[in-house]
Length: 446
Image 1 (cartoon, helix red, strand yellow):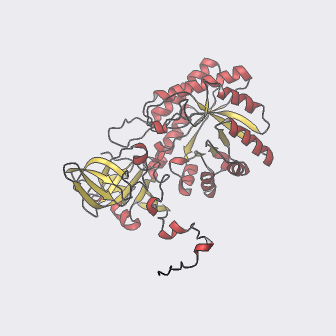
Image 2 (image 1 turned 30 degrees about the horizontal axis):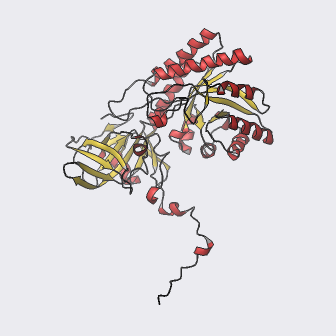
Image 3 (image 1 turned 90 degrees about the vertical axis):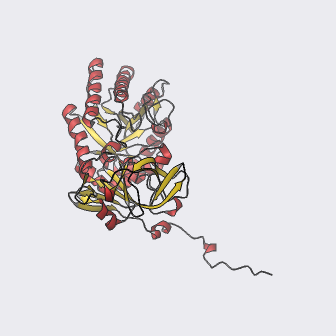
């Protein structure tokens, strides 16, 4: 078991986060409940921002919004001086609703629609990360139509396979993302862009995957990208001045996950870029990184209420909670593993091995397999750790369950940032066809 950020066990032997007793939070807001440690989020932002500024002054940190995005999170990111990585019209709209400056947004995505592109251009989104030839052509066409110039990066596949789950590897050649180096596509795209009138090539981007603990792939990616910047200069005479190395830094989901500092990661990539700039006699490009999970992941905790238990003799004991794959899809999607504690009896000793089941009508709805916990009783509160990234973002209404609320906790105050959905919210966008609106007539039986 590990505690992060402002977590502690208080005098009542309850789990406390941000100075707020989680038992009281469950009473005030209900369960399931996402609890976000605001101070830890801000501290993580500061580590990236300040370390990168110290080691590589011409730099920018962009928070990867897909990990967790609400209007309050956008405001926090802006207050901490970070840019924002967005991947859809919806994320752009959310940021704009929080008065986040569009010029500080970096727009990713492998299939941007014409309407999304028009929206981004109209609001002055800072950078488009172009993923394919077809997107490049579409972007140039739409920009010409609306009389705008689109500043772009190309997403490059550096050919590096990071050691992580294969669903979240993205830097290898066989990926739906990006343009390849070894097959010549990346260079062909660069030459095409340099001849277009409504796009302006500013730099390059890569992202090799997520939940990566080995630092070596990040160093290799930086080397490969700087080598390509040098190749572009040799073949076109153009020196690109911006390099975005993406994100992917891993976090602890279990106590034995590797632990190293964010500063170590920042130091490594800054050194790698400096090394290659010296080797190729290139000016140092502006360096960007896009952390998401490593900013919010460990700052999130989900609180559940224990319900039914079921013993399968000689096989397994199941304990069900009032959430599941509707609020945490990662176990079903990635076979993700978690640690948990009994929030209302935080010092209780583990007595039995159980598996934590969700309440969805789905055999795969399991949150944690085979974890040692104190004997659980109906009404206990189970806190699942490290649920700040890709939990609220992936939450869904499977089985017509409502999505949980989100609270930010800091210095003893709990602030609601997302309301709990109601049953009325579930049917808000449903439309009854006209021919079904009248009461159905019962067929008379002969």
